[in-house]
Length: 260
Ligand code: F6R
Image: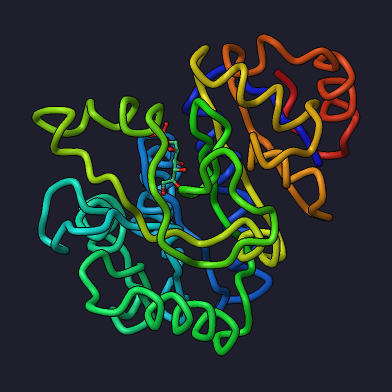
């Protein structure tokens, strides 16, 4: 795992975008794993800027989103379908039929989840998966105690996740209780993982992810088992890391690394 500590959100977003661009340069028909939430917004804005100003091409790209709330129609303002179209898809040139987001309104969740897994495989697997992390250490909606080998499935949201996400809804009671989510095993199958985190509220989760035991209580700690996982965080999110100086030393010593 490589830990990259940056001074602010803008830098984090820029570095993550550079990593995505590197993947696209090597493989223009790459399969991108997308995340929602407030954390990756800056990354999406930077990719949109690169598309508009530098002709970054997404015409051969396929995407798979991590998760979706159960029960929200695609045009609901808090659905992840809506989020992705508003914040990214409508601004770039990914062919609509290459965009895959779990359905929150299917009549058969089990069959849909099996199809989603099959579709990822048919597309050659995910080349790079973008991740945020919940305050409780979840990735996608793999809440504490989710199996580290779990696949795409229905999941009941934990109280902390419902509390955290209530800020996006009129009232707490409106937050869906169920979600459809890629599993930890699905995420670990991606060739590269990029986890982004900012702010003090993520400091505990980041420390557990990087330095804690591998535990289903913090599903992000599964990244420790991945061969190519990058964790990009700001000063606040890094504030409880014990080995911080070591991560900074490694990053500064990297050829071509931007000096702070
Ligand atoms: C969303 C997702 C979630 C979020 C996490 C952090 O697709 O997978 O795991 O990444 O809840 O959310 P924010 O970025 O809003 O703090």
